[in-house]
Image (cartoon, rainbow, N blue to C red):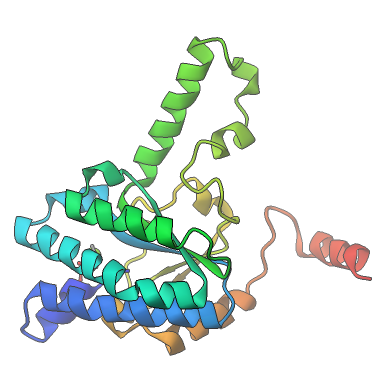
Length: 235
Ligand code: IPE
Ligand code: MG
């Protein structure tokens, strides 16, 4: 979710107003994703690096996050949305952490869609964390070096319980991943739209999903190989 600040600045407004409008997009996109039948949606709401932003902006974002969690709980429950978070959430202020835990707990039976908020999240930090866990297991003799496989690594990521990452949408035109789900992004499709996040709503999500549907995901194979596979697996 990018472009809140620029959206506001373009209107001569404080950045926080852009974040507030962006929070409306979160509500709209989460509802739309659920209606469209998505299994999982992960929102990059706050990166580890975002802690270095001006203090009032950080606090404003924390307050918006708190308000979102509080106000949306009934809707999440009604729609069977299960809320989770990934990242170094211990760093979040107490009032947000508490609200987050409550929401995760209250929605844990939701079977409609998993909504994951990436909070104080960093892809490199996640990879280092997994590597450290593996190193500890190896040094304790619980894991042999040749048992360090992709699967073992995957089991130590924050997203181990989520389906494979299919599509990454970045709003506001920047052509980079900015430390988001680096391990998981290996074969994800990327869609970058010029639309700033505060203007990204259901219609824009549908457009991105349509674009995604027209992509050919080859995973290193050739188109011919994929076609042959399709014939094999068709009834
Ligand atoms: C939202 O957009 C991302 C969050 C950290 C919530 P930005 O705040 O990065 O907006 P720009 O990039 O300054 O326009
Ligand atoms: Mg930005």
